[in-house]
Image (tube, rainbow, N blue to C red; front, side):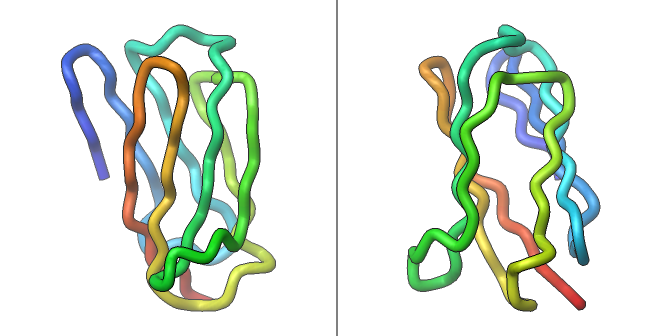
Length: 88
């Protein structure tokens, strides 16, 4: 999954995912603070983390049930949504 907006490129894999979802960032200032919120289909936040932006960030899906989710990535310079399917 690629999401390109100007010079910002966000790639997420694998999808579907079982235990870890990787997010790669290109064209974004490293060290910027980014919040990742994993929401279920009702909008309930099932996992959330705030990190200093690196070229790759991993989000654990170990405690998340199988199903469809949206991962919302927010920082001062961008906001993106990635749809994820979690499988066991």
